[in-house]
Length: 329
Image (cartoon, rainbow, N blue to C red; front, side):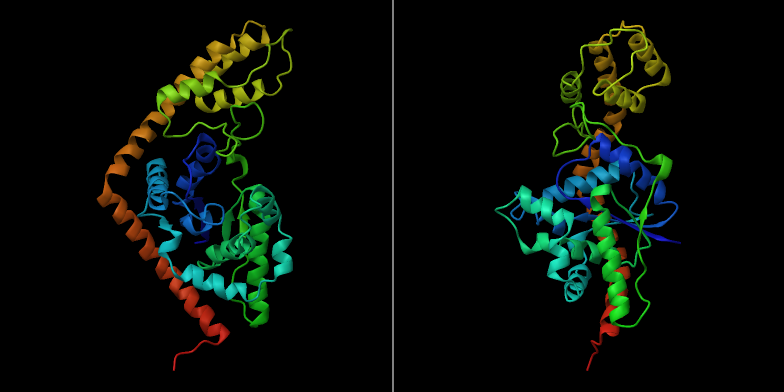
């Protein structure tokens, strides 16, 4: 069975874009592949070196992914910092990573532009740590977004370089995992681009109904159609994309007909969309609250994940050390 690995951010909450863009597919994948999902708390320090409450951030993310359907008994769900083999492999891979190639990565250039007062070594070697995350389980496939494709290519480069330097065929060449037709791009409420935390245009799975209603009612619209069957442009096209995800087909058809005959009232559409989003998110939100209070279940999930992840990681690190030449006296 092929091994699939995916990292999970340890800051912020899940929004609808995360759920439909990845998590829904992760829940299905865990039954079809040997899946490793990790909460990237080491990675978070590259942009948040002094987090206010790292532990609670990680706990919240863990609860949300469990509530969304990841099963710690089926897949391996773990916290990055609970697997010490990862930073050890990171150190060893750094010995064959070169400053020039790291400085040329797109993510490094973007990060130093966004945080010029915090250009730390972790930012520079971010692709190496990502490679260690992937290679520690000798993964075959990695679900990545467009912004991370270059870093996955770097992981392939480091794997290939290790194999070449030590004259072995040890590491797999990890391939990007493509969800194909199942991949969904969820638009934000600001009328442009995809939903995201940093853009401030998202609806989170833990948002209360009152918050959801306020956010949706503030969604950007236009002046309305002026002729029958008028071509739909952003931001209305985005609003209908959300409606198609969250509402029943007859609801979508109702508002589409209203748009096409120029009788649509965007306020009515938004009210309906908000209620449909609330209907969808309420069971997940309530489950997140329930899991967050269950310290025993959370602890068991974390310990089970760490144990399974370390079993895989320790074998890889042991093999890598032997290949390099580290031997016990």
